[in-house]
Length: 287
Image (spheres, rainbow, N blue to C red):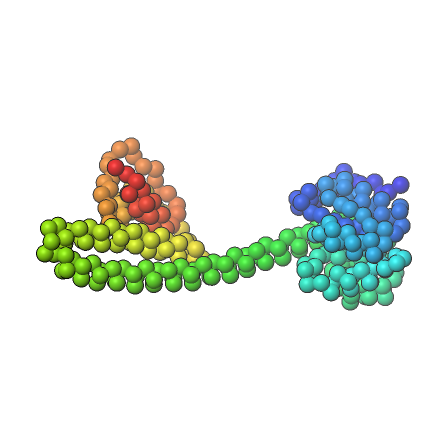
């Protein structure tokens, strides 16, 4: 029968989203480890030897592996080396189980690529502490990788947006040249000049809206440097209305009503930009 869990032993991290594979050929030890982890809410699967463990690493895709060193078919050292040969498993946290006093086994396991070790017979508290530390490490690595990926995507999207903005500007300038030429040619006909001018204004308005969308995307997709301080919301709204009215079709007014809360804490410039963008986009939809 496995060691009893102490009531005060509480995991300090969320456990039900951590997948653990236990690779142990001894049925008793395998059951003890599985029960200790399951009691704390960890999602676990087991394997009976290194070869079985390798198959289940591929199938189960665990966050953490606990593997005994001495096993038939494929031992723990072989399993660790096989895992580390695949770049996809570079972040997989591996804890090896070794016999008491077997320093050489610990050294071999760590040299093969294991992250940590646990000596048998183990105390459940130590097992959980090492598992929790491993889970925290894995989650930290995953967050760092996600942040790096988001930074790369943001930089790529920003570059594409810059290119679109440049193309819009070129199209806008070319449009004005074309409209002026057509207006001169059609000016002798009744309403010809006004017709071309109206068409050009409509197209230019859509180009301006596209440029405004790109500018806002570039502003909000870049890393924000927040400058928190006291914010007068009435003043922020007033400046946002002035900014929005500079655009095509802007005709917003700010009417006195119920007193606004304040002063608030925040970034006044960022709030002004957000309100101004909202008003610009609502303008064409407002009668």
